[in-house]
Image 1 (cartoon, rainbow, N blue to C red):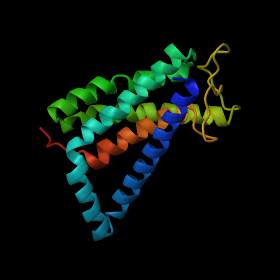
Image 2: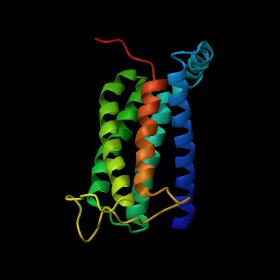
Image 3: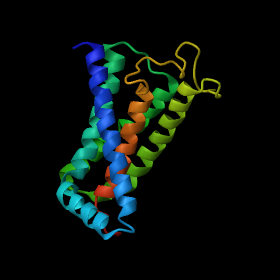
Image 4: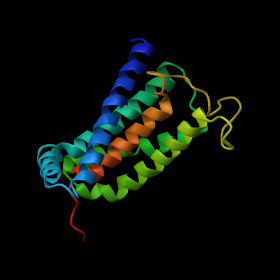
Length: 183
């Protein structure tokens, strides 16, 4: 498959994931003041909740495989911030996979901080790409963090893909996965 097809497919997944994450956040906030929204989110938790850890695992797996495809098959050299995002995303695959198999909602206490740190790095990376005047002390001249290798739909770049992945994992874990009892 050509890189154009793969990156366009990944960008479409990002749009779907972003819409889903935004919808869940809006519904979650609305559920605090609306009984209709509260019953809808309760129904979603009942329906999707049992598979929510699998869904979070799938997001992390697709993000990991996508980044490996872009670097190993297409030949894009990851910049320093890309490596930091990988450091945050890659461990989420086995952590969320094991948690999904065990149905262990307690993974939230480990996965949420990791995804939040990755999301912050991704957000900074997106800002560097859109505002190249920002300081980027950790980036090299050979592989600048402001370089845009892929851009679909006018705004979906590799760091945007990572950012939406991290946000999706955070939303799934905080909105759909039930809280585990404290030990």
